[in-house]
Structure formats: C-alpha cells, structure tokens
Length: 312
Image (cartoon, rainbow, N blue to C red; front, side, top):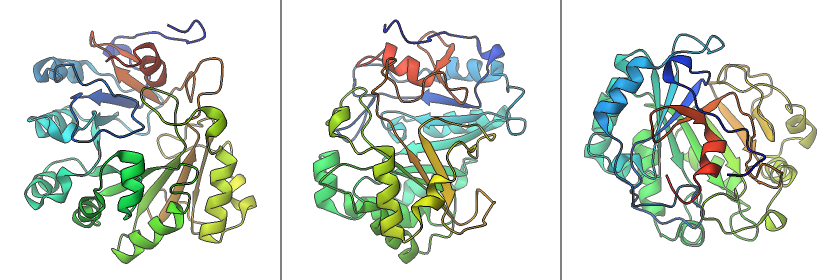
C-alpha cells in the first residue's frame, strides 16, 4: 500500500460517505482498454451479507436528505442475476440507487422494462464512443455503437441520466459536441454529461504526460459547445449536486446560463482522473465516495481502489 494513502475502514453504522459504491460483480461483457477494475476472478457479491450491511448503513449528518446514494456497479452490474434484488433492498431501507452500466443489456427491451419497474430512478451510461464504432473499438475494444444508442433511446426521459465519456488524445476529442447533438436528437431533456481523462488505475492506456488535462477538456468543451471558457472556469471550487460537496480537479456547470436546478437541462461535469500526485489517486481524502470492502466495512473509494489495484 502506498504510504501516502490515507486509507482507513469504518463500520456501516459509522458511515461518513454520501455515496457508497457496491461492486456486485467482477464479471463483465466488455474488455475496455481503460478499466479501474480489470480483475475478473472474484465471486459475485453475496446478497444476504449485502442486505445485512444495508440494514446497518448510517446516513451521515451532512447528507442531502435522509438517505445515501448506493452506486450499483461492477465491472458490469447487470450481469449479476440478482441485480434487481440489490436495488430493491437499498430502497427498502430508505436509500437511493444509481445503476452504473455499459448499457449493453439496457439495449434489450425486456431488461429495460425491469429497470423501469424497479425503484431505481437514475442511470449512469458509459458512452466513450458516443455513436461512433471506430471510437468504441479503439477505447473499449468493441464495436458497440448501435447497442449504446439503443440503450440511450430506451432510457429516454424515464430516468435521471448521467453519461460518462473518457476523452483520449487523437481519438475522440470531438465527442463532446457529438454527444450533445446525439442527446438532443433523441429528445433527451435532462442529462449530466460527465467528461474525464484517463485515470492511471487498474488497466489503462495513457500515462499522465500523454493525457488530456482538466483545462484541455475545458477548452474542447468551450470550442465545441460555443460557450466562453471563462464561464466554465468560474465554476471552479463550487460544490456539486450530491450535498454541495467540493471535489478537487472538477468543473461542473449548466449549459444554460442561470440554470440552478441540478436535475433540469444539460449539465457538464469535467473531472481529471489523472493520478500524477504523491497518493497516485485522482481525489485523495474525498468525503463523498466510499466503497464496500471485502470484509463489509466502508473505505474511501479511491484509496480502496489503489490499495487493491488489480485485485478486488
């Protein structure tokens, strides 16, 4: 473990994180070139132990409301045969959920019907290639644009939507404008478009010196969406939607100037996952993100990823 990491574990009753990552499976139906959780040889999360954990999970005093956000994630969480039980249980005990997915199974109408019938009301859909198969092949090692677009259409305006896009030099730098065009063409009214560079965790393709910087992405956003760079930079140091927390290396702003409703309209969130710092992680000492550990405690998310890199 890196001696610079401020790593610790706490019991669920003492939880201090507003967002808790729940890695319900290490299986995946993709093999992306950039993956912070590339290990596949771990058993699926035990549902009964998860249920006991959620029963004990405390809501921190500084949470926005009376619940935690449980991020149902993997590798690819839709591959767990009891994914909807995990979602149902979180809501049974008063929490909220977001499904963080590559979207391949959401392209199936039958699976999407189950999602709509579930209590989960928020989806994070990775869209590194937007609607361009060449981009997906280079970044995610799979030509899957048709399924990604179908998943987007199925999600529609039925959920709070977040899209996630890793930007890479010389490949998909024009993805910002292309994604806004795609979202508007599909009639998506409200979305958080999350843009980031390559994080040096797990399996990755670019070292820090090869990466786009936070300001590089801000400039690309300014150019492609025709908004002033000064406007984007003015949001530095301001809190984001999960409880007004301030995250380092992040710019988050509405495309419509003056929009203060975080769940309405188009918002952009630019984050640097570059790990060029002594801790080797993007956001040391985050008070927002925790992760369930192997022994059913909670650790800070990025610190736990780094301490267990290429493992759990």
